[in-house]
Image (cartoon, rainbow, N blue to C red; front, side, top):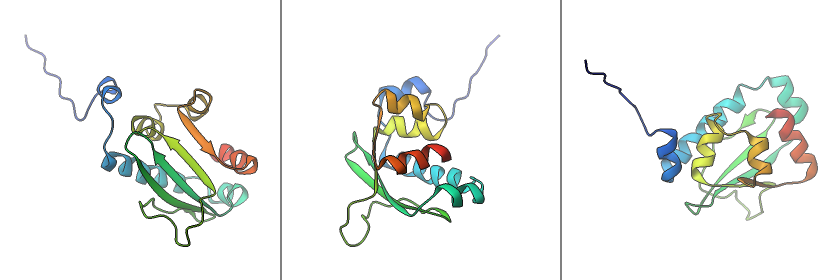
Length: 133
């Protein structure tokens, strides 16, 4: 008797051996925006202040920029915000960890403590983000 297994996409182990593409990271960030939109509007209003956000994917040498506000999280783009002002919240992560984080396979607290995700933000911003995530 023959058994067949059909897989769609790479396994977790295969993803760890290769880095994700820029397009896969773009898709993961779009999914993050959608997840953020699912947060209760009252919780967002209570904990969110307007901030610009950058997410640097270090192994791909690409940075995506977004904006966090009471209404949600704007879609990320590779264009920096106008005016040349530095972003308020800076995330640095490798491509596979970004995808694992968004897919719920990587815990944010463990990733931060293990140095897999680096966040450069004010202490107040870190506390606000923690309450939302």
